[in-house]
Amino acid sequence: MMRSWLDLPRAPIWRNRYQLYFFFLGFISTLVRIFNATMNSIPACRNSSSRISLYTTIRALSSASNPNSKRELKDLTPSDLCYYWDTRPPKDEQLAFADKVFTPSRHSPVKLWSAAKFRTTPFASVEPEVAFLGRSNVGKSSLLNAIMGKEICWTSSKPGRTREMNAFGIGGTKGGESKVVLLDMPGYGKASRSEWGEEIMKYLQGRKQLRRAFLLIDSTHGIKQTDAEILRLFRHHAIPHQIILSKVDKFLVRQLKQIKTGVTPANIERLQLLLQGIKPIVQPDPGVAEGPGSLGEILTCSAEARIGPGRALGIDAVRWSILSAAGIDGSLQGGRLAVPSAAETPVTLS
Picture 1 (spheres, rainbow, N blue to C red):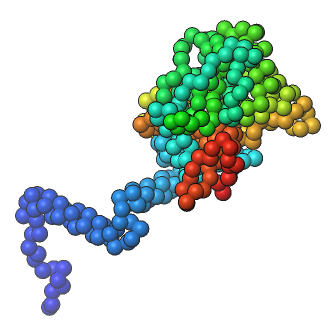
Picture 2 (cartoon, helix red, strand yellow):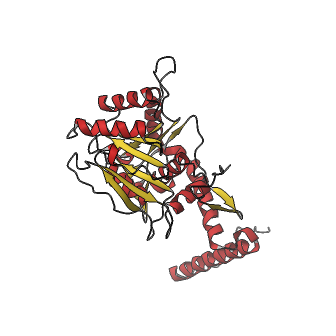
Picture 3 (spheres, rainbow, N blue to C red):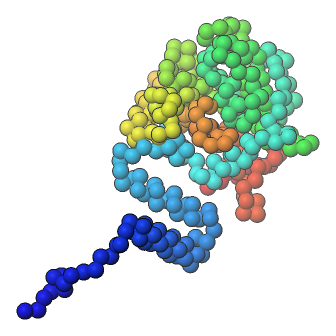
């Protein structure tokens, strides 16, 4: 009777564990060579950046297949962190353009002026301005430092340290004017003074260079009565304004050490529900409100949560919103994004 090959005695394949080790080592090396050869045969994958992009795409697809997988803070997009309903989230090239404009240099950022009273502010300036307001100790100065990429604003844990309107120029060149001016305003609420509020309102109502007021709100505390009053004044005087929620990292994770392990989809969804709940407060029904509400997007950020060298969570989207308010949406010159001068008409990037 013929015997099946399965019944024949077989010689041992592995004589010892060292043979097994070297076999797998050679097998893995062969796979690596095959992968590199395949990548080099594809023109779009010959450079290292394309390989990284391919790896990132594969990783994102594998993460999407697991709805419970955590995501690193650096991988969160403006659509994850912010809420857009009247506007569109910025594209990657727009965020990169904004980061380039705000990259520190010898001529940017620079402190331009300080003023305790509106009548002492320089009226001859023509650069577009945006102002940052919020309760005392909400983190305005820290946020501005993160936006400008340089520790130029005075910060303190003691409320009420900012007592003047401080202006900082961004995007300037040697012998040239700044592209946009950022104002750090005195805080309201605890440790603030009534005369500061009067001067701030004079500026907001009378400053022709003002393009938008950004109201900073602590995401862990929500909108308080003083914030609601400022929003009412914005609507009453038809002052263009937008909401930014600060310290969003504390909302996404319970402990600081969890930032390194990533954010769960449930916490991202919880953040979106919070932003959707704020929408009717900052943009109430036109039939009820006495004036125009805020811009139809709510931004979030954290000046303390670092996602890379010189990068803080959500700051790139805030930078883009500042440039959009100033009319610097990016012009196309020779196929490249460029910043228009103050005399030029900006071309919106589609």
